[in-house]
Length: 368
Ligand SMILES: NC(=O)c1ccc[n+]([C@@H]2O[C@H](COP(=O)([O-])OP(=O)(O)OC[C@H]3O[C@@H](n4cnc5c(N)ncnc54)[C@H](O)[C@@H]3O)[C@@H](O)[C@H]2O)c1
Image (cartoon, rainbow, N blue to C red; front, side, top):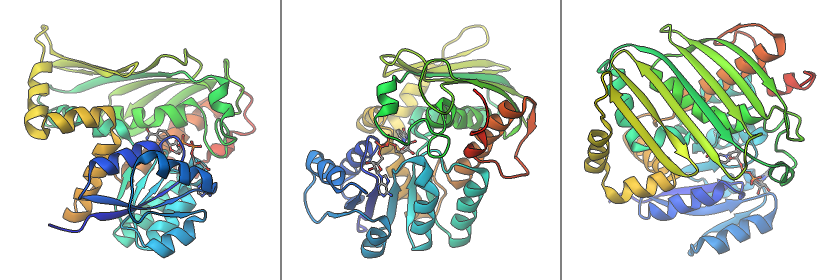
């Protein structure tokens, strides 16, 4: 039995709670060695509330933490504007990464992270939670073999309402420099999933964004159409100007021989996969998921997809395989997002991947 891989979490806010829970559930495979937060009391609170004990060190400075602990895995759960510097330092000091989405705030930074990972043989598992639901992977495998014929088009809507209280809870939220808006924060991992399911890279983006209700710099509503290299079209809606008590993320993929609709509606999973003519295939995939992953992991990973991310990253580090949402997924989704923002700003369709660097801060002079 191999030693558990050591983990250092940098940034002890909202999402870090899910990381700690996943690490607890993977006892024996990974072990928490350190928590770091610029506000020490946040790290102390997370440790207290985690119920974990043992040798877990607390730090305020992430470089000091990485230098001291030399963790196998660094989990970067700091505000998005800090992902680049933390990811870079961790990889250059020998650590693999669980990097929260978005990978970084510009195409240049994301390409750099991707290049460093490849050059140094480092693994990055992106916090693109939707890819890690086991049933999603099984359906994606069958779509990619052509079982359901050609992918014609797809769509997502992410109506992840947040009030001004959410945006006021931390100074970085909703800013162009450190967060972006509804598309960049709440929708990027859904865009990643849609493109992954559709099996082709985006080649063009046409978009509009707006700010309807929230008092933030960036958009609280965005809509876009992507053309993929295989000719399929993807339609995207991302909004936080919706009811904060109801969070919905729904995906549809239309294929020659089947239609897939799935998602989350107020925490409840939805799945409807049926062949042309109406025959439902849901039961087949649910049974396949249970036999491959077991009941306990199926339920726990649906409730906390970060469990699937840690399990997959641990297996990837030991086997040498790439994680399910790897460094390329991180780069490509930021490139798509920057293409969407650029299209909205310039009022035209833009080609992807972008050939020039574009950063979320390039949106600062755009009148919403
Ligand atoms: N994958 C997902 O489902 C998911 C969900 C929520 C958030 N996220 C991502 O996770 C990241 C964090 O989001 P959050 O909602 O947890 O934010 P948060 O504001 O709740 O937490 C961020 C923490 O980082 C700390 N911090 C700030 N600067 C630091 C520094 N220099 N060194 C160490 N710590 C520092 C803050 O004090 C804070 O405790 C964001 O990038 C967000 O997009 C991902």
